[in-house]
Length: 221
Image (cartoon, rainbow, N blue to C red; front, side, top):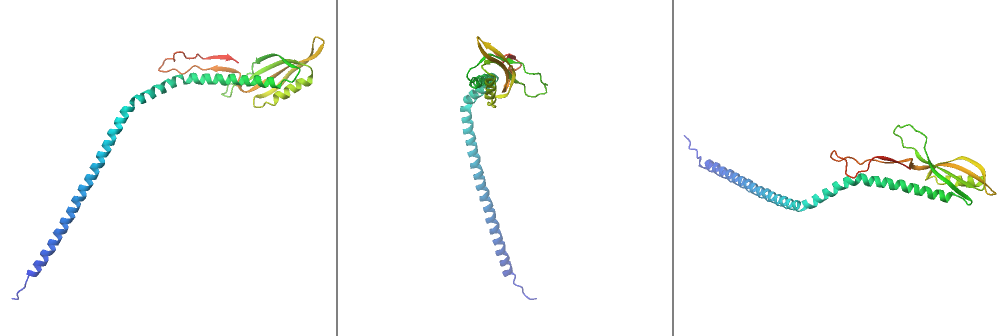
């Protein structure tokens, strides 16, 4: 039988196995080192987040008195908000009347005097959720001629941002002593001014009406 030398083949197989084992060792070592590095990184981030959370909790604890004070101020502001709105509405209502009286004073020509200024009841309107009727004021006065009556109406009509309409009710001749005069009455509709001022009752808090609240009432303009 021929002799077959298997020593070289076994040596080659051994070297191949050793290389494979070394590669596996290096691969496992690399994976182990990567795992340790990842664990270290995650641990560092976790400790950083934990420290930051503790710092934020400490800051929040320090801010608690300030937060409580802000909440108390908000609660008090909510309680007085209806009163502030009521005072603001009353102020706007009063300023509109003041503006109206200034307009009337500027519109009167020379030798024209007012003898009576009175609010009139607006005509009834359907209560279908529309805006309330505007205030109507009747101006009664005396002047020297019909021309001055027309001039007064013309001057009033120029203030379209304040007055919606100016209507003449009547004119009639009269006299003061021996001087002939013309008596007149005209109606002026004030733009954007409600005929009545309604003071609404503030909303109730916790089932009880706020102490010192304003009762609902209607004040005649």
